[in-house]
Structures are given as structure tokens and as C-alpha cells.
Amino acid sequence: MHNESAPIKDHFGRVLKDLRISVIDKCNFRCTYCMPKEIFGEDYVFLSEKELLSFDEIIRLAKMFAKLGVEKIRITGGEPLMRRNLDQLIADLAAIPGIKDIALTTNAVMLSKMAKKLKAAGLKRVNVSLDAIEDDVFKSINDRGVGSNPVLKGIEAAQAAGLGVKVNMVVKKGMNDSQILPMARYFKGKDIILRYIEFMDVGNHNGWDFKHVISKKDVVNTINQEMPIEPAEENYYGEVASRYRYKDGEGEIGVISSVTDSFCGTCTRIRLSADGKLYTCLFASDGFDVRDKIRTDELSDDELEEELTRLWGRRKDRYSEERTEETRRNRKKIEMSYIGG
Image (cartoon, rainbow, N blue to C red; front, side):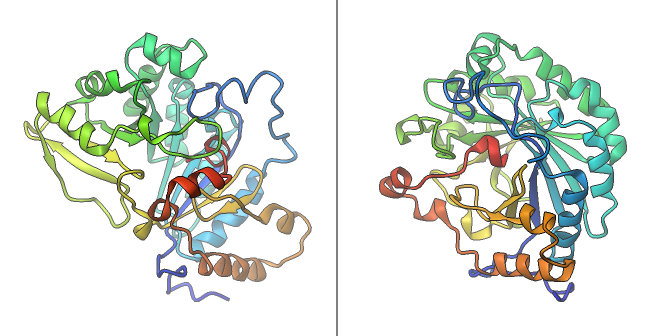
């Protein structure tokens, strides 16, 4: 059995601290860079309830990961708020010894109704995906005709409930680079950190090409010309966003640059898909099927813990450091909507 006082380390000495849990593969948006309608159309077959991990199964695994050093849990999807009774899962996760922080990634459309309940259950923070503030641009991205107002109302409800809020904007040249400044103007001074994310080659259907990438440098220069910013220190080891604070004191922005910069060297994350596969990298091709091992009672808790320790110990992933045209073309990667980012 694992010695709980010593965090487990992978092949490169990276410790395990973060668990991302996808609770559903469905989403109410069809964003062109994530779940394009041509692939995820009306006839697309999503996971059945039986294929999804139950809350009990998720809790069992989360308890084991907490023993192995996990302190932070992020709930993702698809759109996690589409999973029924999500507040119950959050309450049970919050009760696990060693878990210090529970966050949720969401498009916030359903957040207005649920923010108070989620906060009461033990949720600390939400990361809201919003790729444009102007309705016409946002509607063209989500491909569902939804304007930005329901998302902004969800953000307000989250703040009113006492949840911390970050807003994530994936920036793609020709799609929404016109929104870099309008987004900054809107969120500046609102006690919300806006984070710009370089368009990444996650999955196989998002039409990624380096020519669509707006670099961290371009984002920073664009904002700095109108609203002067300066670099800020990272908040914690392994933080993926480069932080910049406004010189007038009205908050900060972040830029996540996994294309032009790599942060593999400090990656402390493992990901659990909605159907119970574990992935040690966002760009992984294959997962470790833990659902079958749980459901067949093949392993005791101690044996499963050893298995998870070995899985992390063998981890050698560093895709962003090794990315080339060839690896990008020839590697079939897990879809963003399936693994939750």
C-alpha cells in the first residue's frame, strides 16, 4: 500500500496533485473548435447512463486519489451541469479528507439556477468558457444561436453566491480574435480573471492548424496597447496561465499558451473520463479502463490503489514539448468534449 505522507511521482518526478473528472460527454453547445455539428449531429450516439460512472464509483476513485496526493478536483464535461444532481456529487467529494479545492468548468448557461446550490454543496470556484462578448460572434461559435447574455447572467449568479470566477476564452485567428479587447474591457475591474487560451490541437476534429494560433505575445501586446499590463508572479507551482496585472490596479488577465510555450514539466494532472478511463495527458490517445476493474470487483481498494500508483509512475507524457507537424498529424488524440480539458 502507498505511504500517504509521500506524494507519488511519475517518470520525470512530477507529483500528482490534480484530478479532472468528466461527468458527462453531452453538451448544449456545438462549438466549432470542440464539438462541431458535422461530427456531433442529431444522430450522434452519446454515452448511455449505464456507461457513465455512477457517483458512488467516482467517489470511490476520488478517495483513492486523495490518498495518493490529489488535493484539487475539477468537475468537467461535456457540460457538467447537464448531469443530474451534480450538487450531491460535489458534497460527497468535498467531504473527502485531503481534498482542499473543488472547481467546475462550465459554459454557465444553466448556472443562474444552480449557483447557490453548488456553493452550498462545497464548490469553491467556476471556470466559465466564453469565447466572445458580442452576440453575433458568440452565436456563430456555439452554433446554437445562444447570445452571451445567459452566460453573463450565470457569471453574476456565481459571484452573488460567493463562488470565485475565472473566464476562459479560446482564441482562434479568424474566429474571435476581434473579441480580445472587447472581452478585456468588459471583465476589467469586475473581480474576474479573464484567461486567453491559445487554440490547441486537442482531439481530431477541430481543424487545428498553427496558422489559426494567436500567440501569447500577440494577446499581451494587443491588450497592453490600450490597457497597460505587467507580468505578475505565478500563484502556485504548476499554474498553467502566465499572469499579467493591469497597471491601474483593476485586476488581472492570464494567458494559457500550451502551443507557443510548454508547461508539461510542471503538469500535476490526471483526467478521468465520463465512462471511467484515466488519461495522464490532455493529448493522450489511450486511457486506462478503471470502470471495468471496479465493476467486476477484480481488485480490492488496496490493489486498485497500487494499480493507480503504477499508472502514474509509468507516466512519460510531454506532448506539448515534443509536438511537431508529424506527431500532430499522426497521433489520434482523445476529443476535448470527452475528456473535459
